[in-house]
Image (cartoon, rainbow, N blue to C red):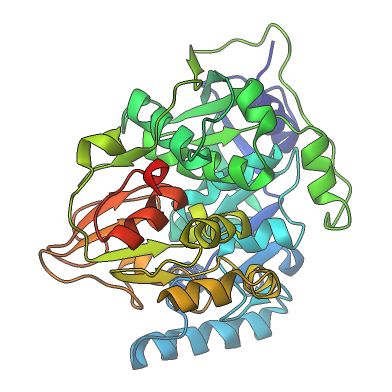
Length: 413
């Protein structure tokens, strides 16, 4: 009868755990980045803790403001580097390595059946590998650093089945925006989501990461895709330790169930200032834009950059266009494949791997009244710059729009 989340949390807590119950569970991986590590370490010191529970299970990527955008940021990052050395934390990935939610899979930390906790709301990304992965606050992470355990309520689970083949010029991002638009910003609050169906089976691991990444935009605690052969192939040669895939029982109990057919799916856009404010690209086609941003933990992967390069062909971007690969590995692979050269020739600026403009830190902040079409996961008011307007879309739509200088249906290119 248990769902995947119930099974993983039962294993982690050492007892049978059902939805609605509170458990104290052993954490397999604890992750903070440069933005949240500062508060976590501060709280840890205030607790009087001298040593972390296990330096091998703590991951610290620097990704949110890299390189540092001012002296204060640089000083805080220096302090965390020093703390990591003092604690013997080996898995510290400094600036240029990439976004935390890309580094964990690439480096073999995101594994089926594991409990992954990150001080970042989009930690749910790692559910693409069959893990229970969720975000917590920095002070909660301090407690994990001290004890290696977390106290949480076992979520009820929503089952979502998606069937059909992706139509031309659509991708996992369009599927994701469809789900968020249908469920709403609070439609899955503190629920787990399990994804099934033909569409999910056919998605690449990168596409699955996109889908799970934005589960939090429905209020979900986590999202999980059952591991399959694609999962195992991705992890082959990457996995840092043995893992045991976890699957829901055939008679698992779900709080709700949804079914979607994407056969007629059109390219979608999320309008300002809410991720669930979705519509077809045709409904906002022709909207002038000032900037296009392709990147982030949602769509800064190799297949996304390849898509942008394929669409641009020999065209030129008519608005400022920023492309940020999600990791150093992706940047190198995109260079080897010629994608970066093509995008630079089209007029794009390539920035170092990291988050940058997604959170309004630097390398692409927009001014008051400016419009940005972004492949990121959030379009809240002021996120990329006070007074700016953010539309969210797929790499296909973003690339086509960058060429035209206005929101454009990629099927027109």
